[in-house]
Length: 141
Image (cartoon, rainbow, N blue to C red):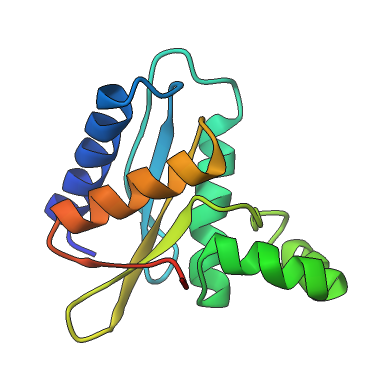
């Protein structure tokens, strides 16, 4: 995940949130190995909003699926997702708003996690940011 692309993801996600008058967001972009490449927390976010956003992105990369799909899996296989949360030190957040980032050939580049508004709005901002960077959003839909 290139730094410039990660910064575009953050910028566009926040631009869309402001255009739609969403609640303040935290945005975290990580690469395929889980390292943070770019992040921002808007004024007014709660204390652990960044941690939730990071957990959505981290879980997506750790399990190779969007946090929406992790939530669906948690509903069917709660013990598995609980075990993954334990293995990762509690860093998996199984709630929509964590989207995998792929290149045009389908290679995994990383993920973006957003938290602050509804899960659906968080996910929409992820998708918009990824598209603005010329990359492919993988929500699992």
